Length: 372
Ligand SMILES: Nc1nc2c(ncn2[C@@H]2O[C@H](COP(=O)(O)OP(=O)(O)OP(=O)(O)O)[C@@H](O)[C@H]2O)c(=O)[nH]1
Ligand SMILES: [Mg+2]
Image 1 (cartoon, rainbow, N blue to C red):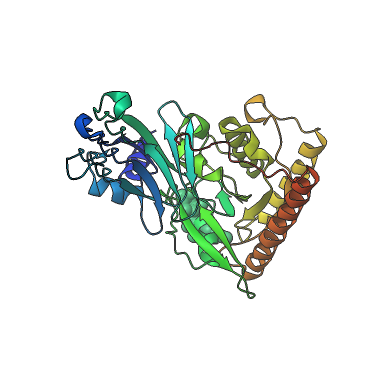
Image 2 (cartoon, helix red, strand yellow):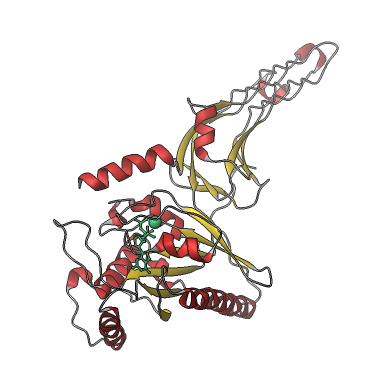
């Protein structure tokens, strides 16, 4: 597992997508009993979504990861109401989810400018607290970045995910003939002739055991959660991480990807999905493809004998299996772009109809800001 360890180390060095912060509101200012003066409230701490920033930038600017808002001003004879303490706004990238140490979700920052209150300042001194400004309660919060993309590329290392993204979008992720070339998620946009844009996330390759955090593990799977469509990319020649690991046929890679996703979060496999079978320019590819298609049919009919350690609990229903060559067949790439759009639109329409049928109930974020 040397390779895997090195990759994880490199991943942490280059990309931060989880960050724990110490946050504390400011202490309230003291009141002035003789004049009934009220102390200013302590400042609050907010996390605010900003474009063009990363969690890494945040750590660089605040290596100690501690944020304390300003104290409220004391009440004075000539300034009877103390001034409120200064608020602190912690800039975070769009897509961040703010959680408490107990895992409760405080809020989700999906659009630039959105903010979540993470620490409230203490009350200023007033008749109820004997005019003594109150201390705020210290708190720890975790910022978890989950990319927001329409499509997520899911596959084993070396399957050609980055090559595909390079070919269908303006993004230029690194492509190389060794596994784990991609060590941080990267976004690209497909721009259609009518200017419609669809965002695609190129994700690090998945390996067996990712759901228990092997390889890129959770750091990769987290980003799949918020995509609307999963585009599985498999190498028609199968996959083998190294000579010490078992060779996996194309069907086995599909089943293993299916398993890893459902073991991480079972609802991931209910997402709309397409299966892109890549490297169709390889010798013997047609023969392998015919076998894969036949096996997938048997899987759907439930008549294929699958070993227990490969068998998913729920099989992913692919909208389509698309043979392609990200390197040599531009026609297949155009077709994939078309299908991505069609499938996304189809499922969005379906979802719209379903939600309007259920008395206009809008799908709710399972997390609400807790602080008033
Ligand atoms: N023959 C052939 N090779 C391809 C094709 N697509 C990609 N490759 C090659 O496969 C290798 C891996 O491609 P990548 O795009 O880096 O694969 P990846 O899935 O992003 O890999 P990781 O980032 O490691 O997960 C590179 O050497 C590519 O040139 C294809 O359609 N045909
Ligand atoms: Mg890659």
